[in-house]
Length: 496
Image (tube, rainbow, N blue to C red):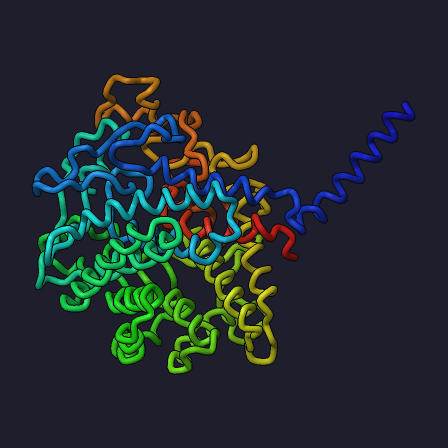
C-alpha cells in the first residue's frame, strides 16, 4: 500500500512538472521532425521513382506527361493532395527548400543535407524541362477540373494530362520570375557539391528571368490557360513581386551589379513597399525584403536600406509587445491569417524570423520596434513557439506533422494516402471507385510521413476529417520553409 502511495505521489509530481518541461520543448525531437519533413517530398513525387525511394507505398506516375507537346515533362511534385503539377507553387517550394539549405545547411546532419539536396533536385530537374524551349514556359501539367472530380491514386490517374503553356510575348512574369528565383537559389545550394549542375541552373535562371521581365504580366491573365490555373493558383497579388524576387536571388547568386541596379531602380515601380507583411506562394514581398536586407546588414550596400526598413517593419508586426503589432495569434499561440490552410503562414513566417535573426546576429544588430528593442533571440523564441505548436504543443496536444509522435492526423485529404497502395492492391482503382475510400471513416492506409496539414484556424480547433481540405490537406509549400526552421532547432534545441 505504501509503495502505491509513493507511486501515486511520483505520478502526480510528473504531471505537475510536465507543463514546465513542455514550455522548454525538451521533449520534442527536432532532428526526427527534420528527417520526416524532407521525407514527405518523396510521397509527392511524380515520374519514375528511383530504387532508393523510401516512401515505399508510392509507385511510378505521370510517365506520359508532356507527350501531347512532344516534350518530356515527367518528374516534379504534386502540389498537395491531388495529382496536378502546378508550377507556380512548385517553384516557390523549390526556392524555399534551397533557401533552407543555404541558410541552415551547414548545421544540418550530413544525411539530411543530402536528402534536402535530393528533394531540391527532384524539382529543379523538372523545372529545367519546363523552360527548355526558347520564349516558352510550360506552367502546369494536368487538368485540375477533371482531376478534382476523381479520387484516384496518381499511379492510376487517367484524367487528361493537359499541358498549359505560355509563349512570348504573352505574359508569365510570376511563374517565370519564381522559376528564375528557384533555379538561382538552387544554384547556390548546389555550388559546393556539384558546381557543374549549379552553373546549369544559374545560366538557365538568367535566361528565364529575362523572359519574365520582357513579357510582363500575370500568367493567369492569358485566356488560353486561365480556366486551368484559376482559381487554384491564380495570381491574385500581381506579378511585380516575382520580378523583384527573381532579381534578388540572381543578385545573391551572381553578385552582378546589373541585378543590384534592377532591385534599386524598380523598387517603387514594382511595388516593393506594397503588402510588405505577406509571404507565400503568391506574394513574395516580405521574403524579398528579408533576402535583400542581408547586404545592408553586412554593411556592403546601404542603397538597399529601404528594403531593410520594410523587413524591420514586418518583424515588428510579429512582436505582441510592439506598438505596430497586428498579426493575429490564436488563443493557443498560433499565427493566424484568414483564408484556410493556415499553417502555410506559420511556417513561412517562422522561417523568415529565423533567417532575419541570423542576419541581425551576424552583424551584431538588434531590431527597434518603437519603444522596445528586439534581439535576435526574441525573434527565435517567436519562431520556436510556432514550431512547437505544430509539433504538438497546442491545446489539442496533436502533432500537425503526420507520422510524428503518437497523435497526429489520420485522415488527411490526400488521394495517394487514402487509397490502398498499388503495392498492396495492384488492380486499377478508377476515377469513381476511389470514392469509398474518401468517404471511409477509417484512417488512411498509407502514412504520408512528414506531411504538415493545413491545420487549425483562429480558434485552435481541428477535426480529423479529410472532407475539410482547408484543414486536412498537406502542401509542399507548407513543408518547404519548415525544413529550414527544423534544421535550426535540431542544432539549437534549447532556445528559450
